[in-house]
Amino acid sequence: MDIQIINSSKAIELFKSLSNEFVVIKNPEFVHPEFEIVPLAKKIYKPDSLLAFVMDMDGTTTTTEELCIESLEFMIRKMSGLLTKEQWQGLNHQKDYPNIIGNSTTKHIEYLINNYKSLINKSYTIHSFIDSINWTLKTGKSEQRKNEVKDLLKSFGFSYPFEYLSSNISTTKDINSDLLNFLENRLNMDNPSELVKIGIEIYYHHYHQYLKNLDNTNEHNSETKKLIQPMPGVSIFLALTKGLLGNEAKNLSEILIEDFNRKNPYIKLDLTFQDIETKLEIIGNYFEKNPVKIAIVTSSISYEADIVLNEIFRQMKNEILNWNISEKRRTKILEKFSSYGNFYDAIVTATDAYEFRLKPHRDLYSIALYRLGISRNDFDKVIGFEDSQSGTIAIRAAGIGCSIAVPFPHTKGHNLEAASYILWNGLPEFILKHNCLINENLYGKK
Image (cartoon, rainbow, N blue to C red):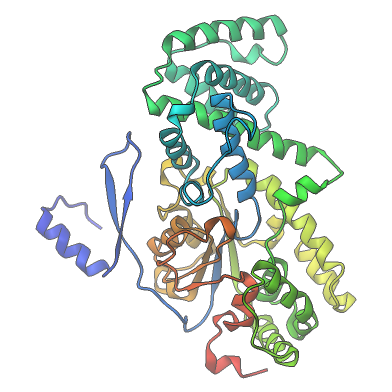
């Protein structure tokens, strides 16, 4: 398409032709313009056919959002010196959680810095920042993060031969001393942009330290399982829609009912056990003949996603070992679940885009559609799954009309009006109550 400079009247005319529904997305301070107006795909409730699913990772596929929230609270505690519950109760579920889940890390930290600025102490902030960059440069495993730390310090006007940090203790002490003096004179506590940059480093220190410990240990303790584990029903959902279960899907009825109730015990299934078995057999047979492509889409960088997904697939393989299915089918499923790279048709992380173009921007989901080989004419045959307001909007902004919200306790207060459905009982509800949105003409055929 030719590049054209047009006036506002022509722009309005073109916008009207794109959609009847738009979203206003605010940009960071350093991005022009101040905000963007983005057309949303027309909402779809029942695709004519299914080609692909695009799925969020944190909060939709896994419980990793718990770790993100813990790391954000850790950041404020370190910057304030208020380390105990007695000193500061911590983040507020009602006020804070809707603003720190679903967007980019930068936006989450911007919100917390602005709202808890009165607690932040310069001395604690500087010392915590120095501890964090030392850990990242000396111990951290992400080369991307190390480069970001170096670029940040250069942007502050501080440069030093950081390559000597890991091998020379005296050099480390010299750097720390020089950096401490530099920041005490340089850091402007009235500049929220600088505090956000420092907060990001403290956040990632805690988050990546946890992931490194998880990656290095063979013993997966209760804390690990609490912070990172598959969401209820996700292993069955993935195996089912990839066509791996076939008619044996009915054998997992009891597990799926348990997962349905585990996500939200207050909503009950109005189905008999026999109804559920019949339903799962039909759906299993359908997807065995018509498996969908599946992409994982996350605002986590590739280093984070790699560790998290390896852990999730380890746990899912353990679940599959206990499924009541034939050994032949189990072997086939375990082979497909041997690694997340072997299972997913596309994997899109924050490393594939810029931090300020993450959700609610469409970029990650547009990249997923491209990598799946889905043409624009077939976007109406794709379903997107997200747990947050920003995520459900990003799906629609990418041209996918069927955006499904799968909220977990911390996102239940989000505005999810962009979604076609809200699954309060998670992915088991999508299977048991919505029949995976299989076309009704096809659904009745075994």
